[in-house]
Amino acid sequence: MKTKFTLKNGQLLGDGAILMISALLVNIGNYAFNLVAGRLVNPAVFGEVSLLVTMLLALSFVAMAFQLTASRFTDARAFLMQAAWRSGLVLAVVFIALGSAVQRFFQLSSSLPLVILALSIPVYFAMSVGRGSLQGKLNYRRLAGTYQVEMWVRLALGLGLIALGWGGMGVSVGLLVSLVACYVLAQSNATRQSAEETTPSERKLIGAFFATTLLYELSQILINNSDVLLVKHYFNGHDAGLYTALSMIGRVVYFGTWSVVMVLFPKVVEQKQKGLPTTHLFWGSLGIVGIISALVVLACLVLPTLIVTVLFGDQYLTVSPYLWRYALATTFFALANVFVYYHLSLDRRTPVLLSVLAGMLQIGLILIWHESFTQVVNCQVVAMLVLFLSLVVYHAIVALSARSAAAQNADSTSLQYQPSAA
Image (cartoon, rainbow, N blue to C red; front, side, top):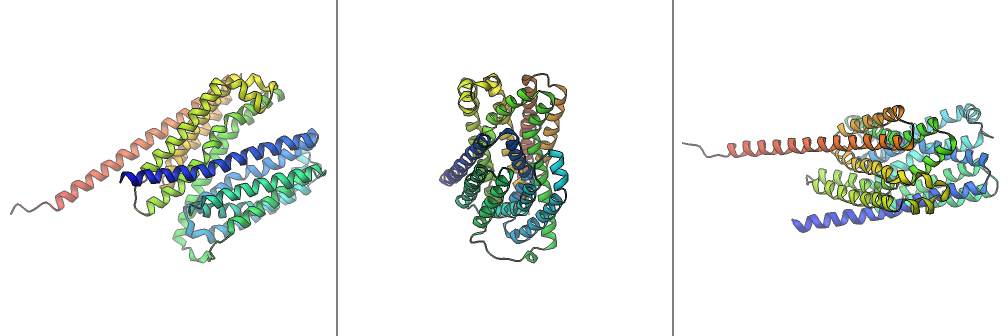
């Protein structure tokens, strides 16, 4: 029994390493894209480039909801693919219809990049279903490959077109082609099935799970981006730029451990379906995330000046004292993610509600205390600590309830088979 436990954790580490390396390369590639694009064009064009990328990323919570749902319900892939295409096409039509208004609001030079970007939406959602299917089937090598294809095609084609003077059009075309290439890879060797194979009761269950996941992914965007948006509102442009650099470094903890929970989710689902224990997967994932997070926080505490200088340059050194605190807040958030994804894979929804409340708490605290970077970062530390502790309490309550139920079942079984006094 002990050997079986070790092998499972070794497999978890191995699978996590594949996605972790892939995620690291993708994050480096995305940073390189912004850095090189900023050097190729003037600030006005770069503003359009960044806006177009941000618009697609704003829809990532919907795409991730499709991915996790497809990972949870691998047999409903055809139904989810159909839903992804339909919802994506509806959003694309709305996006195109509002193109002129969006162009005027953001003072873009042309609405054509918005049209190209709109065509990316249904492909993005459908590709996410394909990724979720790979994730649910534990095909981590191909899953990691989809992220690599998306990043490298976007990097090469997007930057190439920008260098040729395409500007925002280059970004939109690069995004569309990269998503199409990723979609093709994610669909390779996919078994054909009909959406009608999914029963109405199954669709209702899938819909409820999708809505819950959508809410949780929305809360993640809320937690990850609300501080930057509020700082841009309350601080001047120079300070907002400094804080953005601080947040990008501090979130290394989150992006560095993201692959662990992506591995945890389908493995727990698989173990549950087989009637096998899942606790060791939870503690193994929590331990991995804790170790990685502790190392990052320690590095930010001991070498903040070096880290900031290497990544952004001397002009950003004023944020170095806040680096370890921001990393600490992200650590609590990363640890909380392990709890949420674990219980979500077991169809428990309360952690999602706790995450949403924590996001609202973070916004509320920053709205009250925003006189300095110290106050803003401390607000995040408090909010994420509250989230983490609330999830620890919830997990303990669930574990105690499960033990109590198991003990009662054992007692009832022993009484049922107790020999008669006669």
